[in-house]
Image (cartoon, rainbow, N blue to C red):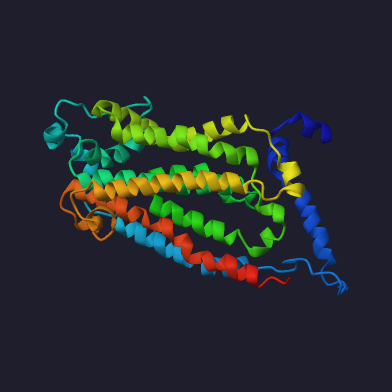
Length: 364
């Protein structure tokens, strides 16, 4: 068996070495610690912080029900009656001729009908911004897409956190790709509730469980810039509309490109997880702060740009006041969709009390 593991003979051995073995050491240590709970405590020694504290996952699932409510709200907000019939007539030349002139609409890019059909509806939703049919739509789509990048980055960071091993958070491409197909408002709600259920306070009783793989943490920023932000900016700001069409099909596949580039860049930097677990469990914090600060500043700049360059008020550009299904024009419908689709991103802040209250209730 040991020889098969070393040789990675089959899929079982490969998955066991990559996913199982990294957490076995912590599992054995946790079991040994739990055995000591209930023993005579020496008064001259401080009790271990959080030792013996456990939370019911069923209780956390009940507390996380607001996430499912938000999923229902997101579904209703984006369910316009004429949206299903939209792909049929939007391709007609006379419908878009005043806006596009002689530019042909791109319907095939990857030469794979199934994949191209998946992105066709996504492509349609960006037409008002491409052809400047409604400036508020351009501002909102750029600003919301930049904001989405921040939360994509958080999902990538959570996927390399030791506490999230063998959980759904370890597969961010599943949620990022689902967000592109079904909408961020729907998929993010499922991500939040699954992450909330699988993050009880006892998971973080070891300081090293919060630690991330440093080589992956360093690689997240350049991977996102190359695979997400450069195609995004090219999609909206390229000089010719025909090139914007091409860049859009490249950008919408960013979950796949991000996974590939992240894996490639992580190979450049050395893995220091074994040393950091013991000697520097907070070594990844400066990397996270620099990475997130860069994106937050970028998002703030584009938010201000959308606010001050628009001819309309801030409420018209950025506030989700309009109901999509009540909008008369296609451009206004798309603008309202993008406004409401970013609302679910703010929900995790309402659960900030969970970590603070759990930490304050720990002994020691």
